[in-house]
Amino acid sequence: MSIKKLYISLIFSKLVVTKLLITINSMHNLYAIFVRFLDICKQLADNLVNESGNIPRCGVVPRFSDLEIIALSLTSEAIGIDSESFLFSKLQEYRTEIPNLVSRRQYNDRR
Image (tube, rainbow, N blue to C red):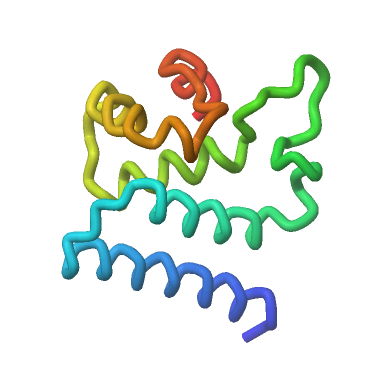
């Protein structure tokens, strides 16, 4: 097994452990889980994204990065939030921690 495969399996084992922690301990701090997934996404993306966490492309640079969109999507799935309206209502509680929060329309377009 190559080093890259071992590294990827380690990342996925972290995801499984995070999911188990959420399920067992009933952890509902959306922001803490979001930050964990964002760190994992940054480790996986390595050189695929620029310094702001976006995939290089022409046009306006978004304030909420591509990696943050992916981490937010993973967070909502891990917690079990199926409704986008519920997700965005919960995110309003974390407006100070996530100041550049994307709108629902932009979230759907970029997800």
